[in-house]
Length: 157
Length: 445
Ligand SMILES: Cc1cc2nc3c(=O)[nH]c(=O)nc-3n(C[C@H](O)[C@H](O)[C@H](O)COP(=O)(O)O)c2cc1C
Ligand code: SF4
Ligand code: FES
Image (cartoon, rainbow over the protein chains, first blue to last red):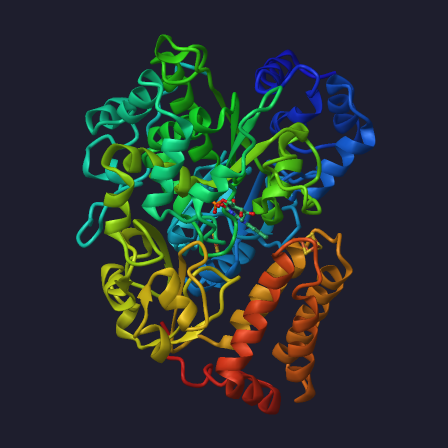
C-alpha cells in the first residue's frame, strides 16, 4: 500500500497534468515511492501503476528505461560518481579509486553492513563542479577531493 | 510546497570580468534568484507591457526574428522562425515546453539559469505562451540536479503568488500555468520528441518526424519546444529591442551566449559573453589552461561537435560561423578543454561508452553501431587493437550518420571521426605499442 505521505506527493504531481492523463505522473510517482522505500520492487511498481490507472507493463518500461530508478536494493546510501569526460579530465578516477578502497566494494556492490552502494554515473549536468557525486539521487557534492569524500561519508549516519 | 523560497545555497560566481550578462544578469546582485532582485532589474515588466497593451503576436515574433536569437539547445535554429510555425488558431490547449534536460557531457549552463535567475526563464516562457497562445507549459529538468529543480519549483510558486502565472494575468484574458517536471537519468530525453514522450509518462524514445511538435507535441497537441537559454533571452530582447540584442553579437549570431567551460582550466564554470568573443579571451576568463600546461585540444560545443586541435581553435571566435568554418560547431556552447597530458584515445573511449550506453535502441544503426564502436575502441585501449580498426571505426561511424530517427546517431559518430582525423598518429601509436603516447610524457599531478 502506498503511504499517505507518498499519495499526497503523487496527488500534487497529478495537478500538473490534465485529469485524463494520469500516466504522465509516473516519473515522479516512481521517484516518490523509491525515495520512501529505498528501491523499486515489482510490487512497488505495480502499486504505482494501479494508483495511476495505467498498465503495469508501461510503468515497468519507465522504471527500466531511466537509470536513476533502482530495481534492486542499493543499501542505505547510494553513491553515484560521474566518470564522464569533463569529470574524468578533473580526475574522477582518483575519487572512484578512493571510494572503492574506503568502502571495500566495486561498482554496483553493497557494503556488508548494507550501508553503502557505489554506482558509476553518466554526465549529471554539473560538469563545472567535477569531480562530483550524488548521494541517494538528490544530494550533489561537487569539487571532490579524497579528504572531502571522507568527510561526507563520515557524516552519514 | 509554497513555503520554500527560491534561494540557491551554492556559491555564486563573483568574477564577472569580461562577461556581458543577459541570461544571468541577476548575478551582479546579492540574492540573484529572488523575485525581488529580478523585479528590481526590470523583471516581468516586458510581460506586463505585452499583455496589458495587447501587443500583437506577429509583432513579438518579428522582434525575436530581428534579435538574431538562435536556439541554444545545440542546433541553432532561429527562434523567431520556430515560433512562426506554431498554428495560430487551434481548438484546444496548446503547450509550451522548456528543455532543461542538459545531459550532454560538458553542458551545465541551463542549471545556472534555473538556480540563479529562475524568474527570467519564467518570464521568457510566459511571453512565449502569450505570443503562441499556449495555455500550459512544462519545464523538463535533468534529474540529477535535484536541488536546482527544487529552487525552480519554488520560484514557480513565488511567481504564481505574485500574479505572474495562473489565471487572467494582469486582469486580462491571458492565462498561463507553468510546471516543473523532471527526468530521471536518460540523456536521450534531451531530444525534443523523446522529452515529450517522457512528459507523457513513457520511456524516452524519440518519435519519427514529421509530424513536428508544432503540430503534434505534448498529448498530441501543438507544442513549442525551446531550450532554457533561448527562453531566458526573451525578456531582455523585449525590454531592450531585438536590434540591441543582435548588436551584442556578430553577423548570424545575435546576442550573448553562455559557455560552459570544463576540463583542464583553472576556473571551470559558466561564462556569458558576447557572440564572436575570441576563444583565447574566453579561455583567459576561465583562468587559462590549469597547472601552467599547454593546450592540446578543445571540444567547442559538447561531444556532438567535432574536437579541434589547439592550433585551430586558438584562432577561432566563439560564434556559429567561425566554428563552422573551423569544421566544428557552436553546439550548446559546452567547451571542454584538454591539456597536453590528455590521452585522446582514452578520451574517445569514454565518450564512445557514453553514446553506447545512452542510445535508446530504436534504430539498428545507432544501437548496433555505438556498441560496435565502443568495443573496437575498448580493445585498442586494452592493447589489442589492429591498424585496420581505425578504418573500421570510421566506416561504422559514417554508416550510423544519417540513418537514424534522431540526431544521437550523428552525435555519436562526430567524436569518432574528428578524434581520428586530428589525432590519428596518437591512435596509431597506441595500436602499435599497446599503450598511450602521452602516459610516458605525463608528469604526476
Ligand atoms: C540526443 C540529443 C540530445 C539533446 N539534448 C538537448 C538538451 O539537453 N537540451 C536542449 O535544449 N536541447 C537538446 N537537444 C536538442 C533538442 O532536440 C531541441 O532541438 C531543442 O531543445 C530546441 O530548442 P532550441 O531551438 O531553443 O535550441 C538534443 C538533441 C538530441 C538529438
Ligand atoms: S538514433 Fe539512437 S537514440 Fe536516436 S532514436 Fe535512433 S536508436 Fe534512439
Ligand atoms: S561530465 Fe560529470 S557532470 Fe558532466
